[in-house]
Amino acid sequence: MSILNADLHCHSVVSDGTMTPEALAARASGNGVELWALTDHDEISGQGRAAAAARAHGMKYLTGTEISVTFADETVHIVGLGFDADDPEMHAGLRATRGGRGERAREIAAGLLRAGIKDAYEGALRYVGNPELISRTHFARFLVETGVCRDTSEVFRRYLTENKPGYVPHRWASLKDAVQWITAAGGVAVIAHPARYKFTANEEFALFTEFKAHGGRGVEVVTGSHTPAEYVKYADTAREFGLAASRGSDFHSPDESHTDLGKLPYLPGQLTPVWDLLADRIQ
Ligand code: AMP
Ligand code: MN
Ligand code: MN
Ligand code: MN
Image 1 (cartoon, helix red, strand yellow):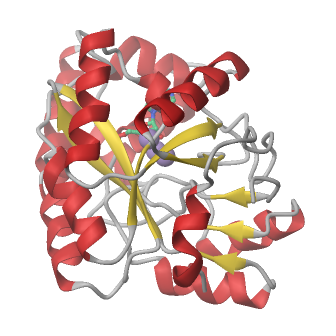
Image 2 (tube, rainbow, N blue to C red):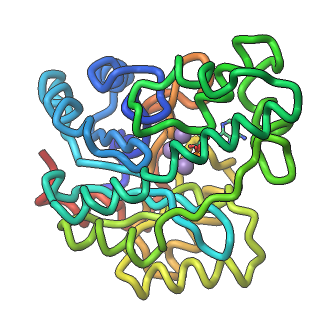
Image 3 (cartoon, protein in one colour):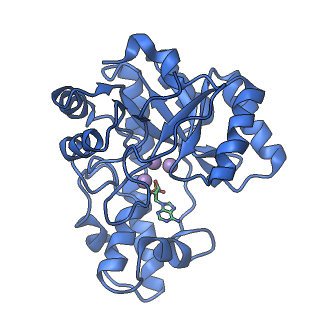
């Protein structure tokens, strides 16, 4: 069923969002979301709260996360949906993926200091809801608050992306491990916002091919990170690779996100919605 207001990608204070799982559930429900998943970066400790809040609002729920992966020297995000949130291997894998974030944050702050920005580590920490999950987004909020930049996109452009003073190369999980943690825990792995990666056509083909070979089954087609032309392009890619399609706003914050929870076009027809693969995992 592609005519369903499913929002299967968003972030809470458990990673780099600004709202609690409960407040997100209320907002999603208010916006007409029928099937919801909270997909915090490299974290599933908000899943119990999100599922309970979804239930309280009469929304269906799928467990979720967004795993940081390094593929062809780029960071790729893999969304996991409908897995068992108590799975020990999943917990261990995500804990290991989060592990390098503290040291990386110190290095980001050192880079920013060389660019004349003091105390960025302490500043970013003020925005962190989960001490294990300090992200570039928290630095971006600090630089906006202190007036260094007008908005978080400007911070990323000027400070936090490749060749900029606060950019620190980092090795995340492997594609194979991320897909296997999700699938071994009974879930479905989904390539998040494929249009965001700076891959050549060959690299993108390799990503999709290897993802499928490891057991990946879905791709985000309609996401807050894609333009309408990209919905069409990745609908074609989904068909070409025999992948199911997902839909999600990637909502982080009312002040920062241009796509609100549930406020997206429906999936194009003739695609298999990822939730059709997960009927028995819906709570
Ligand atoms: P990290 O996992 O610490 O590398 O942070 C990645 C997060 O930064 C993403 O999930 C987005 O929330 C945010 N982000 C990445 N690029 C941008 C951008 N250009 N503008 C605003 N936020 C961004
Ligand atoms: Mn994020
Ligand atoms: Mn992402
Ligand atoms: Mn995301």
